[in-house]
Image (cartoon, rainbow, N blue to C red; front, top):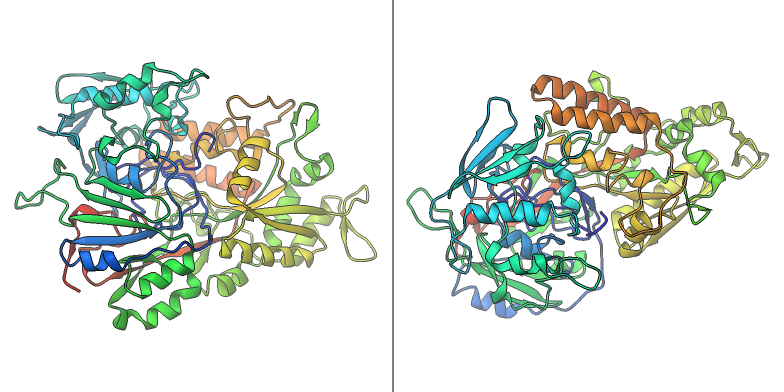
Length: 618
């Protein structure tokens, strides 16, 4: 994701709820904070395990007897408080969207906008803001803020923001026109019918009065300063939002403390202003094991549960006064992918031409897919708490195309794998090692993010699985930031185990993964802005066709016809296997009994309706 590790645009309650919010994410706290993240949230879902940092929480539990306080944890400090370039605990709390998404049903609901209308030609959406909206500093929020955010920031090509890809409509990639109708109404006019526009345009709004001056001021490279303001050294009092909470304090490496926004717009049925819970504390605990230990000791209220600890935690439910929620398959993916880019940079091939020929051979990729023992992955690594994954679209989506209707799948079949390889011109030498037609030993490097226990274990098994068909895999877990740099900047990688995480069911959110020029099309990546060009990059016909189908899917307004288009996308994606999908884990989260009103789901997580949650006495 080029300008940022995250591409989780947020749509309040289920951030960018319907979008496949793709994220390259170094935090595992999907359930502990809010799988309700505003979008986009896809991505890569990188569940890192980092060194332990001490965190004294005894004072919090003492103070929490005096105020209602919900405590969760995260693995990393925020890199910025800037919602334009970063999506994290702070930006998620501070900003609401025009619409919200119900975390259980996935349906759009009113947010900052109390209503919306769609024109008969399906090209214009008019949102009407609630009366009396205010920012957290007491300044009125108006339609001018909406117009400012979209026209001056999001659609500003000078401001790094990978989220903008969502709004590139049609083959020309045109943006919708955003304009003020009156003091409370704003309209989005699409250059052509675009089915996801309602959901995408219902996202965040930023304060014009606080950020406008930084749009015209630029740094030495000509980038507007709005892309770099609100760093982690910013006084929390200077942060202006419209979400349920405001940031009260931040202690790096320790915690973030939020308090209720006194001007929050939402009220309950009796007219009481929300949220009910006075404080929301996010502890920075740079170890998944330490985070779990703290939850077991009563130091936090919500904890994502990984398969290896499920049995232990299940036994402790009653004594520990918590409940483990199971939302079914999570809205995330795990896959192996090869670098299919055949281009050169400065005259040097991005991938060794010999290996590139292997990777770009369809039967080679199919053979790898058949050689991976998914049942053992599920039973041994996921403790049975997962299901095989076969599609880029989540099974919760109404656009999911299941295997029983014709989606190609790749069962574990080493004999079939060998047959495919032999048919593609590969051979076995006297030592039963796989070699290509020129006698080159088939050997490649496969990476993933170090510290992620599940991915490291998955890589070890895949290494063993492929050895059974004569392939040598050099498995090398590396630091997350190094891995991201290889995938998005240098492009000097061969194979990786990675994932794309999301928070919604709208398939168009995957367009920037599958469009040949998409910013997350990393199996055949284009250069990022400012990088050296790639010479001789080739786009396969199937690759281009999937990109065209995504455009058609957005243009199609009749739902049944949209389903047909996305079914074809899934068929082609599985037939060509640029991503070899592995396992979809179950969404599991432990929540203290004292947290009342939880409506857990894989889509929304534990806290998607945080403003409506209440706490009882321990």
